[in-house]
Image (cartoon, rainbow, N blue to C red):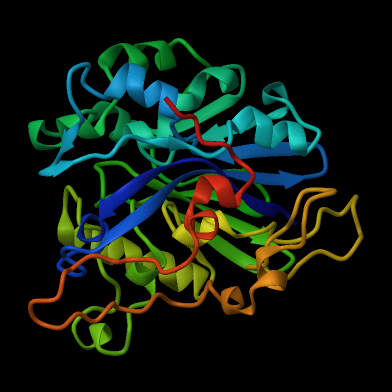
Length: 333
């Protein structure tokens, strides 16, 4: 059995939500975490995606003289939460301890921080590799060509479809969001989870009752094949049931580990609870009971005609800022 932990390395502020939920939530802003998912069992460790730091974004993605305009939206700059190396260090690990790195797809926010893991076995689908960049409309979705050229000199394996990494840890080809996206099926003591290799949210897989009248699932707003994305999401949901983990789910900011490591039998928080670092304050969920059960299906924000279509949080700045909430520090100046 494996454990799963989301490592939030950075986030994209105020992203247009309909970019993730096709034909839903136009004009609603949402903070999108850039997550690397740590998969472990005794003697083995893997990462699903590696995210993108604010530094890499500023150096390699953002134009020098202006903010990035990405598929019609002016992008607010990426904000760091915690470097991936720091996440690992807190767990007594270093980048060389990672045996396998899986890239669900090759958008820049999923593959930029690959350098520290160049000695691990890196898996990407051949169909994804051969179709990157996929189309001029999505040019700003991808890293510079030299980034992929460096990746090709690493320990890179191009897969042709579904692939078993280990008993209880499988990769499945799930195209539609991109030409060759892949998802990870991981068995834990809490059941089988699917880390869905698409830029989507919880709401995509668990739409409201009203939304479900027309959509069993909501496809990603960005896609290379809308119908293929929809069908692959149904496949993912059939495999994972209520245990689908979307790549950009905001709940990842507050999630703890899915379940305990066998070598550490001390009781751990239940799925969805915060897992505070040793010596840190109590979890947010203990301090604020409003956070309990946040991993349930997202709800559609209802807006009256003429109302400003922007999701506004009412909480104190410290509580609503992902950087401050997780012990980070904002740079000023």
